[in-house]
Length: 130
Image (cartoon, rainbow, N blue to C red):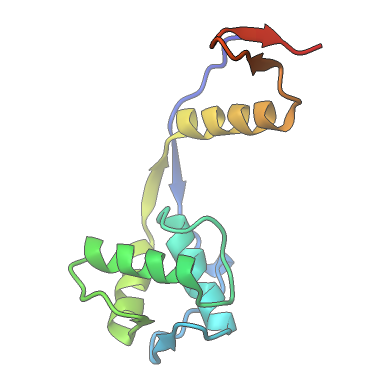
């Protein structure tokens, strides 16, 4: 079926996010509510899948991705400088969401949840599963 979708402007509501304390440094392996607040913002920027309260490898990758995008030095921690830049990056901003991509991903998720419909034969052709 044809699905009509377009891009959608979205404004960031900071009051809906957990408060981010930008005065301290967060380290790899640390667990805190402030890490959750940081990862909420990293998720809004598309750098991490889901917010978490644990500073793990995925969070470190997202932090370093943010740092490289904002010409900040990469590190194994989230410095006050990085946290302030992160806070400023989303503060009062309006973004355009690519709804075509979101719709395509949702269609793929739904299809992946269904049983496999075809199998590959040894000769490379396909057969329909019953």
